Length: 250
Length: 128
Length: 232
Image 1 (tube, each protein chain N blue to C red):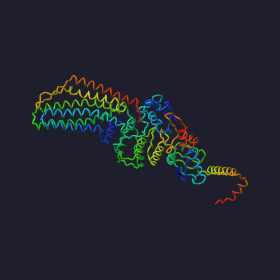
Image 2 (cartoon, each protein chain N blue to C red; image 1 turned 90 degrees about the horizontal axis):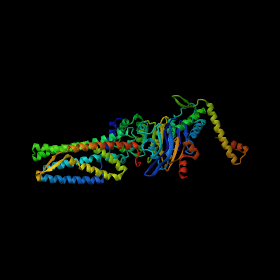
Image 3 (tube, rainbow over the protein chains, first blue to last red; image 1 turned 45 degrees about the vertical axis):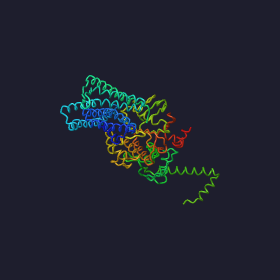
Image 4 (cartoon, one colour; image 1 turned 180 degrees about the vertical axis):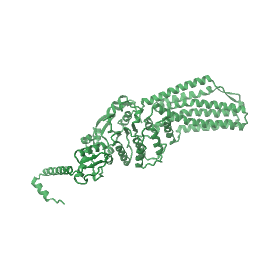
């Protein structure tokens, strides 16, 4: 059995059951959609083209960052909800491989979302914005830089966030009380990203400008810490599977 | 359990008695009554186990027992057959008949009938 | 006869409740052992401990002479009491995938059972009836030709025809004398003749373990034994 076979197994399990949001999820989706519409309408009327690019890409970045742990937690929780967990665990493969395959499948799924979102924003910024507002080449390049910076940041954080999400999926099952704390931690980490990117907003009214002044020291430190943490979490997940000390059966 | 017919034998298994003994007894009965002839192919252990919904080891044990009594013969690679010799079948027939008479005697004694009275009764019974 | 599985004084608690309490038994090659007991007697947990899916709190489990690990699953097929292999694919896709996931998977064995259950290869797993899905899952396990087949309540909630077909398939598998079966069930009726040995569990403890034929001679039938032991 190769890793590719296991990844196929993971992907097949999703293909049958399309994503159905929970009630809370439906509400959140509705709120996000309304907010999006309102923000877009206000920005379009005011003609703050810098603010617009900034808002659209920033919202997308935040969305994609939260989607990573969300997807991962769901994939873990799904094992129990869809009753596939004992089939999964009784596969003749080392536990590291099982988890790595799941991780890879989630990452692939998330990467598709990432591509979609940043492709959309890329087109939005470079083509639509420039054509509609007759932007100078220089401004388009500046805006592209911001989108690129955000995209790369998301890409680099994705694997780390997915690992956290897998952990959260298990915490949700094994120690439900802890899950709120973990979300708070996650929100803290993600809010920190504006500082990391050094997004600077200057000017007023329709002259507003956004600049990217990344703090490379912090970025380096963050990624160093994030990937050490991801490694520790992954090792912990493997250990948890190997110890087979689940809090309940079913 | 419902009766199951296979190769001239009708199996009626009763979950309240050991299956192994019942299989042996019912094969013997079929041979003695002539429902199962000489040199006839028996179902394989697997087939019979599946038909009777019984553990194959149980069927195997019954077959081995029947082989020891000379009623079944297994040829390597060909399967299990009933014996080609009439003697062991004749022996079984006598054993069964003997057992039946014993049972009859028991019942008659319980009813308080003497040997002579029983013999008279037997002679009066319509055989056809 | 080779001893494949041995449990020594195995115990397990969940949240302070003793689910499995000091259980010992062995499974030998070519034997079919039934684990009987009412719902909640700890059968499912015990089976999962036996194959190494759950760690016991106390006692010792030996599978193929060693501690159970992921490697044991190359020779042990475990059929969970509920749960799906995966419902998002067609039967033929699932067979193909199983062929890649399980070493020594023989699609011919599976095909036989599927034909018998009238499962078409193009059907989607989530369209199968409950009985069909159960037989499909059993087919996946049997096609691996495992040394040990562990079935957790395989007949629960199935119609009589599916149950009989599954018993027949299991009998066919053990007829070779190589494969062993360890199977839990709370319903004795379907399996009167299936087992060589029977283990009776009650409140997580072992209350009886003997040859099925011996028990049948002693109690009248397994059903009778079950009732008597559970009442007493």
